[in-house]
Length: 158
Image (cartoon, rainbow, N blue to C red; front, side, top):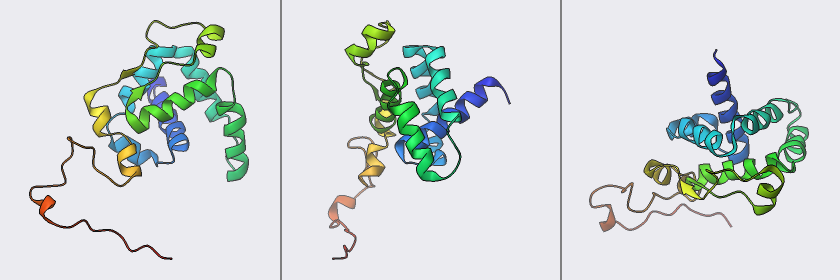
């Protein structure tokens, strides 16, 4: 397996833990390659490598210890935390948001660190839509004539 394949697999694993969606669902969006490339272009390969190394160093079991280690060594880290949180936003809404000013002051401003949408497909494939059980407006229509049928809502147990 090449370093690039290892990076992509680690990025998918990290992304799955950060977003709560399985890696297979993330792969199905077709955005993993674009998102990893975008993060590398913005913060640099060394920051991404450190983020993936921190993820790969997490204990495998038990789940509560792994979650605590993720919070402590990734999300709470001064350098990696803001990048990891941006990865979450990237998957959910397809937009890279400029890193906080405090991060840029300490670790340096990056020329590509501006708020931008990765691609038009990023909007339609955002995890926001399946998270709220909806289609992306204007992009993934539910089908011809479905507007004529009343919405089907699941039964909610009280």
